[in-house]
Length: 128
Image (cartoon, rainbow, N blue to C red):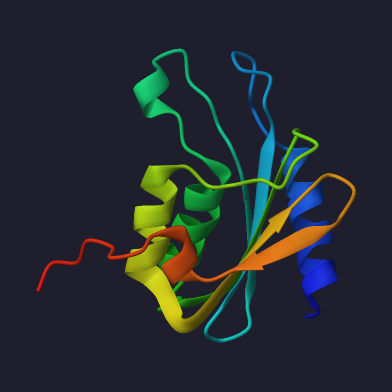
């Protein structure tokens, strides 16, 4: 799948977001190590700690379906700027990212930047 198609999948996933509190919708789409596609959206809860970001929704769906590593993850939000994952999502990404992992940080118009895991979370935490 081409990068621009993965971004389009993230834009479509954003439409499913449940964001009645922040009104800030986020969509994500990822390709795993077997080239399977998984999507996710943010799902808010009135108990904010129970909220799940789009990136983690997509990652958890992929892992629960047998994926071992994430190759590419596209993320888009309602902001006109490039969408950037939160710190918790960056840590989860580092746990499951392939060595050649790429994040497609997108805008709603489909434009995107490519970032590596090292750029997103340098010197990340890992249990040894």
